[in-house]
Length: 111
Image (cartoon, rainbow, N blue to C red):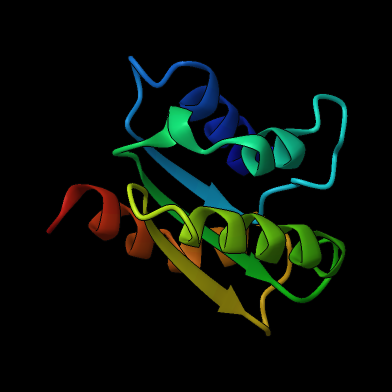
């Protein structure tokens, strides 16, 4: 749930956070309908820098459609900087995230 929570913090507190790393996010949890909120308006995220990714194995297989939907919504907003990566051979686990953690860190904070 770390990727989803990171996105929520950016969404709820844009005056505090300007970046988020969302690895294998569970956007399909609709308790507060975050995808619907972003569909309505991306203005809260203006100027944000967001990294998103998703695997295709395990739980990520279920997460992938909504990750791609969120990617499309965020890419359509020119004021949001987004990097999205797809890892078809990765599972939803700490080993997979550790293997690729350098990618969002460099994207969000530089070398």
